[in-house]
Length: 252
Image 1 (spheres, rainbow, N blue to C red):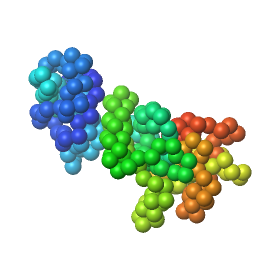
Image 2: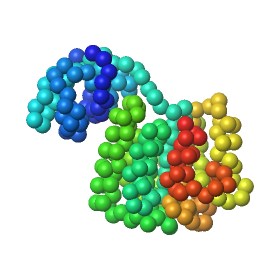
Image 3: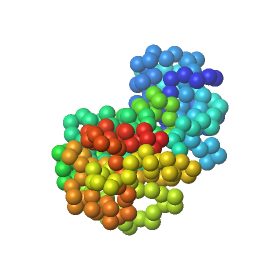
Image 4: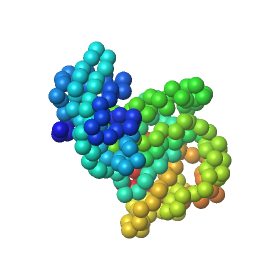
């Protein structure tokens, strides 16, 4: 079996097993008009012995609402960034968050934490927040299928910035971690310089970026008091989603 269209399959995968694709992947396969014998690639959950990577597979049956596949050989391919990148961002307005999730996934982000900040236009209660997370997670899955990643980034539930910092203080920081906040204040270090200085190490990088208008003064002070280093992307003021993607590009 050889490579073909890529499908995310969150159930355990192992060579030789037969399974039904999850609903979203099955609909995608039907849209592509795949037939029994068609080669595809699966990625998602794996056995303890084979973590990550991807699997060759073959379509063995097509029903009206179901697709059966035979899982083949495992390939330990990974297409991740050097640093493990965690984006924490004030939710941009309109549909820009959808676009941001898609592009950040393509650029290799490991997780995205949407925040409601002082200047955030979007306000989500718990119910709407859960629906948005499910929507954004599906966008991340589709982006991974398209770009070749085998590890889907985690989209966390939106929360207020102060609550996020409270949770962060309660957790033990991982080793080899760096925390950066995008700042327009004089004296902020150019992110290019910071990245060049860390060229020989692999870090878990948390990058905090405000929404339209940036973080408020008190919010930025909170980040600095929490150990975040202020960094800059240069002399131009970028939109929040543009700034986040520019930072991920430099850090990748």
